[in-house]
Length: 238
Image (cartoon, rainbow, N blue to C red):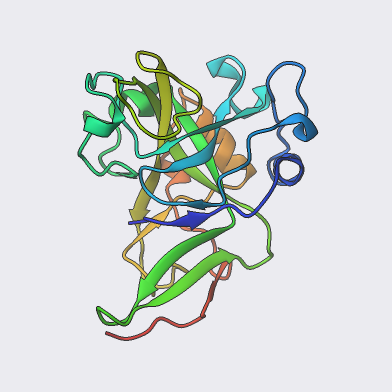
């Protein structure tokens, strides 16, 4: 499962990547451009810390064609039915298993209603023996941005609720998200590093993932071999 990723970019570069790779518009708050965004993009993201995700900006039926609205929230989905605020949510929900996301109580409503994309520059995995592990930064071989399948939700903040929750105060709604994970298989780029992998989306995959009425079965597949590269390149035995 994924417990660390990076997004080494800025708002202008993110907007350009969305336009080039997904042919999608970035929908910033009204009257604001990329240059006017005054909240920095979280660069290194751990579970329960803030990260950036992209929501469909238009009507649900519009999907990718309606543009993508950036949002910053907690990496670790806390469903709306939870009453105690994010700090009281103890389950590890930064990852959602693809095979159970449609039926899991924590994820099923988000799967039906609130899918998102997660931009990243590197997925981080470790190999090797305990106490002497090697960190691997996994990225696209062509150097372009990764777009990963995710789900998002919102929950009410409880008082007192420490940390930054996107400016929300106690009693207000705070957004959060999870990364969808699927099995790896021999020959997959991620297989030497882990038995699970994020769902990497190209333009067609992103459109299918955001289509709430469509079948996502075709989306849940590994990218062609050679799409991803790791640094260091080889896993460490252990």
